Image (tube, rainbow, N blue to C red; front, side, top):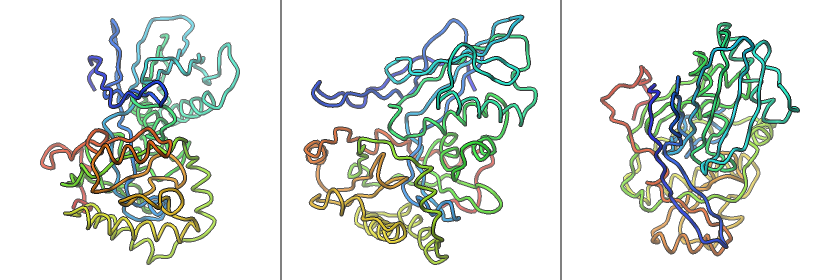
Length: 358
């Protein structure tokens, strides 16, 4: 990866002061005199296959235009220290810690949930690569998010991916040993467009898919105002066993959504997908529960009950935005502004193309 990158911000939406205000940065990197290493991972949204992807169903996953960067600088030292700072899209510091190199113990501060997660990742990376951070140098790390921390777009998965690249270890193994999950978010972090993802007994596999709907101007992502606990949602899902025919049908619906030529075809697959999940989870769909009067179709994304929903409608942007504003939801992002378009299928794919390409 290149160590030179100009700061490039992109404000997708700025609301009035009486509403939520946020900034997204498509390349959240700040110039410094010297960056010895630079890494970046894309954020993610799971359009289909939520929950069932854990049981081997194919899922349609979308890397986002925004993600997280990690930059590293080194300085000679007789008493090496790892200094870590994390910044949000506005450039505000939200996390800071220092660690010694032997066991990555904290220096001069108390344990928090964030430091425990970071320690776990660093220690596991050291297990997988014993040579990681063994030199007599101070290490200064800065991470920068391109989206608000509470949006659920992959602040953890992009961190895992970036640390794995830095430590020269497998990002999937690092994830599975520390946070679990299906791994689709790790695949998104390193992909340059929509993918079909599957995890089975042989491990994760994915491939680019030419999902670039002609009706993308009829699609939006709306933030529900709070981040859902994915681990708790997965634990609840695991309380019951999915039926093979359900898993197979979710795979079929994933393919139908990826290949849909019209908004109506897409919505038809979306509705059946929601119905299957509703029955499996014992929950009402998000449209039934909160938006029954909406002129269009709505789908939960990821863990049900939080984060983002997908909105599809023949209405124009202003009308869709106005509807959700009236519900107290101010983050309404058009599809084309948040999702990476398909990568050139004939280009370099790092060997990840396989029989799942559609």
